[in-house]
Length: 158
Image 1 (cartoon, rainbow, N blue to C red):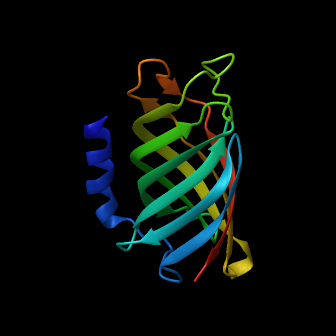
Image 2: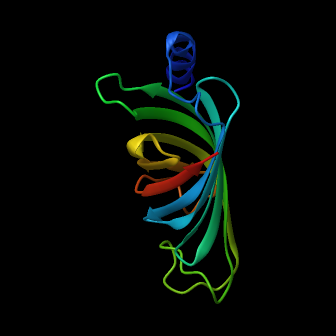
């Protein structure tokens, strides 16, 4: 896996993502989770993306590094891949994580994430729509792999 992301990083030196028009994006996500996102470009094609969202009546925060590439055949469309980490919590009496029928204690999870997605600039404006799939592996014994995290995004760039 590390070799895969290393190869993507070195290949990316020749890529040209269309990020010259913006450095920061804020927005909302909706799908298997509902929340918010802030993306900050730190290089010409690399960005840090903070996702904070509600899932199973608990909260999860993920920080990801993403690498963006233009899709030359479609003006305004780009794709990205990345990786990072997450931390989530469910409070007794409030959250309903899928690994428990009835929550009897607080649960906290942390682990690593991968992400792949598409973003489209709407009519060369400051608005972007997109979607992503973000599998995650938890280091807590009872949760393991979450392969079903997917959402649509609506972001505003400035």
